[in-house]
Image (cartoon, rainbow, N blue to C red; front, top):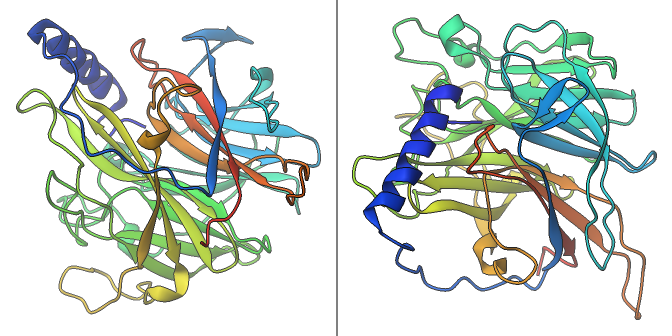
Length: 376
């Protein structure tokens, strides 16, 4: 989702892109080449047409994605505050490539209190959908974690720890549009981690060029009781480079999270720099490496140990044949298993999806990778 209000950042993106074009700046100075991680093999990309019309909706703002391997169905959630909804689709992923996405249905989320959805996960054990969102700070609505039926009915909303409460004075609580951007189920299906995109007001600053951000809280919810039972702090990287035009927009934060195994999480950081574009970096964290912060009302000045992180891949290394550009990827999901071949074991697939912000200069882009080993 845009980092400021949806409309304002769409206008900002358009203005800065136009400004860069008029200034004749050309491409940004090249960063040092990023090395590809051999654990990831690019399969390919596919896109949906901009402002595609489907069942009386405009397809866009897709900010969460998950896969049901039993029915070979994908779920994609739109962060359109005016009409939050999710789509079901087919997305053929093979060792040789990724086929065009086939939209099957769309379902509004009810009730619509403009929750700004950001991530979605299929809960196989119950046949329901978990989804998280930024909330709506201006309307007094904190970040949200909900469970819905496949017909869009809200089954429950999860109670949040008190440090997520909105302070009318703006001294504590979540920042607007920087709420629960990421969500992942534990492998046993008994818990869900909800990840903040950036720090709470009382926890530290947002990232800047040359300066890391304050710690984001990753909160573990027990799905049986609905209670928060643990929490970790994750420090997002600095913005990789300055925006091309002075005083224009740049940001970085946690875009999505995904469990690799019971103890290890993948974290996708997504940066945007006006006139430069997006940067996507995939990190691995050991959840045992950080201390529990659930009982801490504020992290600034507190004693805690943040999660230790390791860079898995700078996804810009894969630009070239098969991947023309990287856009505003906000989704990270496991896809179908690839069959064993040439003496190799089955491989997981990993799929990213970008949120076009309903902006004609951005794209709705699915990118698929084959995964061999992440732990080498």
